[in-house]
Length: 231
Image (cartoon, rainbow, N blue to C red; front, side, top):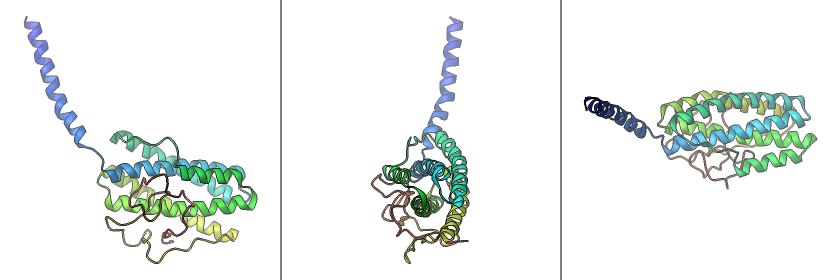
């Protein structure tokens, strides 16, 4: 009987110890902004990894091949952090790019030569504009510190990619999409205010937060998006 009572007491103590821990875990739920940013930036990474592979395989210009390899490496590393952070927060990530991102990949698969290079550079420019703006939104509006820190780490890399893409476009004679005067300032500018209209990666300027619907244009879909400030 004594042994049974001891077991009962131990079980009660274990339950008492578990309850606060479970409650604490349940309390740490990432906001919709944080969740959508993780999901959206993961899809951007999936797109960039695939597009980087295609650039290495099909690029006519050595500059496209080299930058494609760089983007693939950087986005692969970024996605490792995204997956780790999402796992810690219990956020489920998509398994593939958005439908619009996949449409751009299909177009790249069907293009060749100079047409491929032009389509690749143009879509990468638009995609990085949108990814940078969504990352700025997470930095200003995110509430989960680990996700905000991820965005702060990602922003300089995304900006460096954009700058390299602009330089490559100029070398290849590819027009850089003009930006809207009313657009969100890029890195170094004013941080967008909460509730602004910063697009998601692959979204349009009407999409307020990362992780918009799959109906939103993929990287390269909207050239009206404001470009980041070049360094």
